[in-house]
Length: 276
Ligand SMILES: Nc1ncnc2c1ncn2[C@@H]1O[C@H](COP(=O)(O)OP(=O)(O)O)[C@@H](O)[C@H]1O
Ligand SMILES: [Mg+2]
Image (cartoon, rainbow, N blue to C red; front, side, top):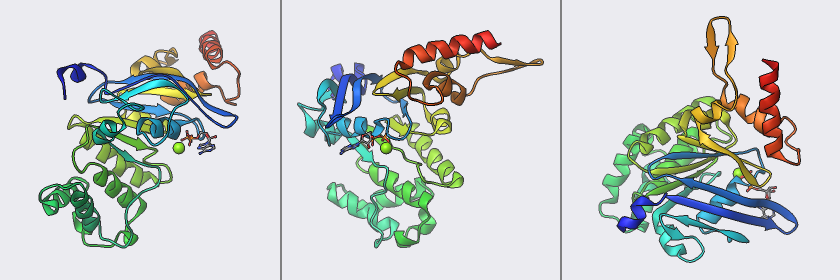
């Protein structure tokens, strides 16, 4: 990596646009992700989160705008981008017939790494899968599969990890297990771009949260900054901070069909101030 790259954000996105035929999914998306941070792209089902991730991981071309990942343009330096990232999709890509350990060894082999067995054993340990290492993945719970999928994506130490809806469809216990896994590897300095529909998840994991709504990022800030969009509700002597859910619905609105989301956000924040 050049010195230049270390000062740049890990991910830089400006004016990204993408339509599928007549359907305008992204209408000018801008955001940056700082190195070593966890960034949550939050949005409802169909908001375009996966579309952003596919463009950033070079699987899909944008219609307009620019994006760079690890300092490399996604359109001009696709191979360098792919060398810098790993992608864990919404649907786990593990091989059911193999054991958990065999899946990990296989990927380490494919990446031409030394000592695939040791790499596999270390990851099994980190993701609390050692006891299940020799079992076929077909016997794993949803949470175990997702953890294995994330473990597989860490092989080769990618600098930037995309997790597209890593807990969608998981039960609450499995979700907590995946959160623990994400927190664990984020502590090692990996940059994480996470997409989620789950407000709790963003609140639990992210250093910064951006809300994707009607093709644009309508807010982007730290949890503290987002919570400052709403005044705290005073309940007797205890000051209650708004949850991210309060902020989300104040900004997006309940029906999600308003023409101008920014105006809605401003109006919601105003009206909630007036009510208090
Ligand atoms: N290949 C495609 N062809 C046509 N429409 C698509 C395609 N992929 C996604 N879409 C549509 O684009 C919108 C955004 O999809 P997606 O990026 O998957 O959203 P999210 O991940 O936020 O749920 C949805 O309305 C989806 O149906
Ligand atoms: Mg999706």
